[in-house]
Amino acid sequence: MQIISHNVAKGSIAEVIAKQLIVKNIDDGTDLLGNLYYQGYDKVILHEENIHPQFFDLKTKMAGEILQKFVNYKIRLIIVGNFAKYNSKSLNDFIYESNKGKAVNFLSHTDQAIEKFKC
Image (cartoon, rainbow, N blue to C red; front, side):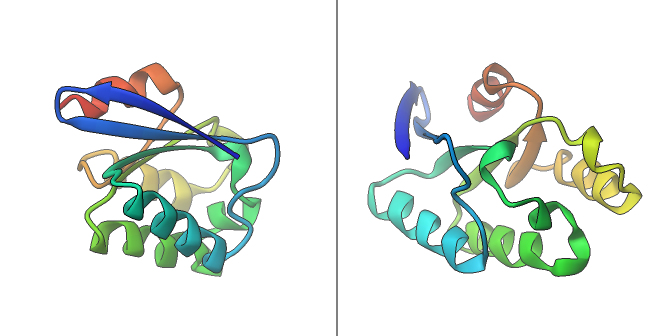
């Protein structure tokens, strides 16, 4: 796992890069959050391919538990990827509603994520 730091006017963004799954379960999500929090990041870009597919099945509650921890610690999170492949109305609705706010967003490109964090 590598953390690339992007500097913007409102702080630093941690982009987490890896060739394997980083978040396989709730504990992995919590550990990642703690690691980034203690490094001083309050904005995180995580790539969809580094998250276990169960995260995107809302019935597992994995997404809810992990995302709630990011919100509680006031760490903005953008997950970058192709979410259409999950073919889930509930996930699409969740993404739509999340993207209305700033706490958690789902975007298709890293450049979009960096621009969103500038707001």
